[in-house]
Amino acid sequence: MVMSVENDVWRLLADPLRARIVELLSREALCTCHLVAETGARQTNISNHLRVLREAGLVETEPCGRFTYYRLRPEPLRELADRCAALAEAARAAYDDDIRRPC
Amino acid sequence: MVMSVENDVWRLLADPLRARIVELLSREALCTCHLVAETGARQTNISNHLRVLREAGLVETEPCGRFTYYRLRPEPLRELADRCAALAEAARAAYDDDIRRPC
DNA sequence: GTAACGTATCAGTCCATGGTGATGTCAGTC
DNA sequence: GACTGACATCACCATGGACTGATACGTTAC
Image (cartoon, rainbow over all chains, first blue to last red; front, side, top):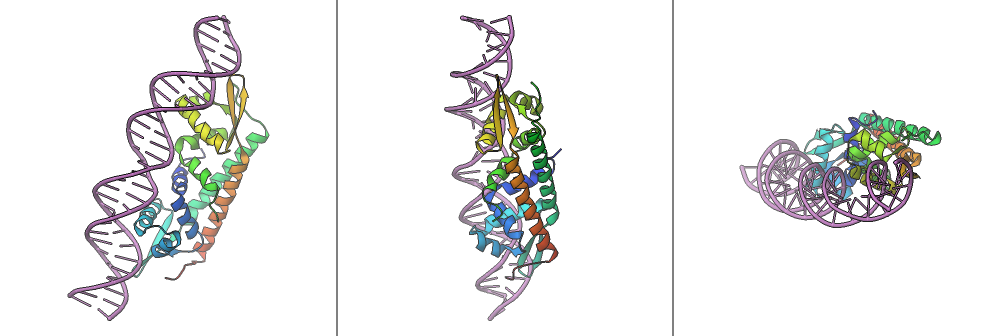
């Protein structure tokens, strides 16, 4: 079972804007205004996406005065990377050994 | 730039049925009838998804009589896994070192 | 030849979801 | 206190895309 819970994470990263947000957060914690400035998207839009990411457990929030810092949680990404690596290795093995199921 | 061309692959894997197809193909080459039997989806549906995967370069086809074998290409998955690992490592570093951009 | 099978293609439908605008809330500033 | 700024929430709209049915094509079996 390669895809189970992780399917959620795949779907989250499939959206270009969310992918951009995750990429930005992978380098440093940012607050909403930073993300709005970096992406050029509306604040409402960013906020909605952050909510989705938060509810999925991909990001953590840290209120800081009237700002809200968002930080990327490493664990889910690590898990995703591992599963993806396993998938790639399985594909490599099946490909090189030319494994096929007879009809 | 973590997400560039790979964004396509993310999006492809985001769909549950396509993810299931890719998972099945990661173990062995299969023809359409196998995938139909395994997933329970309609033949038309499977065929449409296979077309998408084929056009994206994720799978190769090998006609075999009236059957068509589908095989998963390892390279794009390998690339995806690497990028995903890099993302996870960056996130880990930023998280542990508590890097944040000032407002 | 015809029939049955495996597969591909196309057009249409329907739904999930990304984007937006209006509005509310809380914190800081004056 | 009032006002501004940062952010969240909600309702609505529009569009992409997943799924389907009808159909066509090539291959094997008879």
